[in-house]
Length: 149
Image (cartoon, rainbow, N blue to C red; front, side):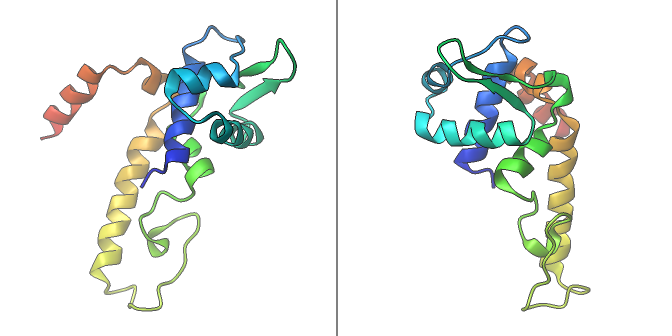
């Protein structure tokens, strides 16, 4: 499940993706525009900077900007950095696999279903860029859901 940290991180990145390339945004402006607690956003942006998604500059003319084009930032990578593995259970994780103590992995139906869930989540999040997210409209999402039904 996406945590508030992941949600706020994505909202901040989308905010930055709407700016002209190279334009800096103050943390306070991002926080107010997206209804994110500033102190929490400071920590999130620090993690995003360390992971190479954003760049920062200190001082009066400082702020944050994307470190690379929005088309090159995959949503799945951002979520893994902020929230960890995409799998609902550690035994279904590709990046942080942990064996369960209470089941036989070869016959565990729950694990098999969660492997399928993890694969589906990764397929969506790893195929979408920050630019896709920035440019999507609610109509696009609703149309896609109707087509899948």
